[in-house]
Length: 198
Image (tube, rainbow, N blue to C red; front, side, top):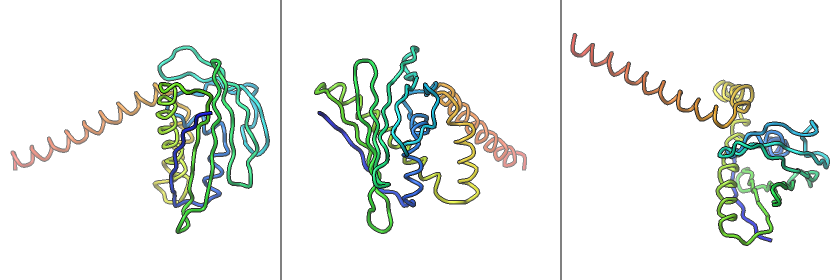
């Protein structure tokens, strides 16, 4: 059994981190590698109790949706939980662990375990895990705090961004970047015009 893991320290309450990592539907939506199309059967995707369901996902570079069989374990001691993802004749176990780090920080570990010694598969899983973990950590940070900026970003993430497909998100990012460049160019033009005329 091979395994890879990542770990991050966060200055957030344990309850905030636990709420995010125990929501399977949210975790799947946060992955930057696939779109969550549907969950079959439609269940309350909470890790508070064992459940088994099929998640229909579409990888970014693949036009054909795939169904993964997901078996989630109950949360253990409000500190960890895991689920197994099986599809395309391959299975991997995804585990999350919380620990109390120094100075009130929470340590969040995410681990993949899989039955393969293939270096290419391990490298692919390592990249997938790295960016998925990063997305989860950033979302957890966003959930902590009550400032107006965070509230706006939370609303945007939950109501708009997470419902977009990966392609739609990529297009939106390009449009945002183009708009920023246009605004900067307009400001520079106005400054240059005032200097030239004035």
